[in-house]
Image 1 (cartoon, one colour):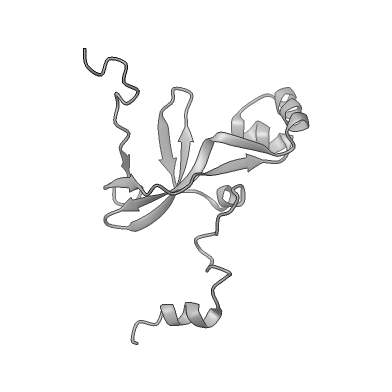
Image 2 (cartoon, one colour):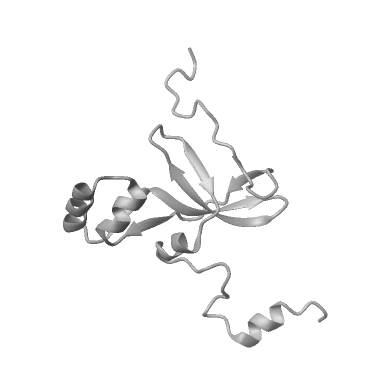
Length: 131
């Protein structure tokens, strides 16, 4: 009868989309996705137009608590940023985020662009392999 009421009955293991090795969460903050108009709400949340307009009038910026971008670690590929979505049955699924997903989050830096607070010289020197 031990663990009868445990919330953690099934272990949530995630696997790398590139090499299929097991990956681990790094404990980074969750960067939730947000939507700013009724068209985005209807398309992304699969709800009716009427409900999307009602949500948009009450909340001009709707934060989706079922989808977020989080940092993971793969032993083969290193650090990965993945889009985690919670389905209706409370199961989590992971995908590689698109550019539109990165644009719908706050306080994130696009991974294909260098950090804007780092100077061009420092960025170039950090990539120099024959120092």
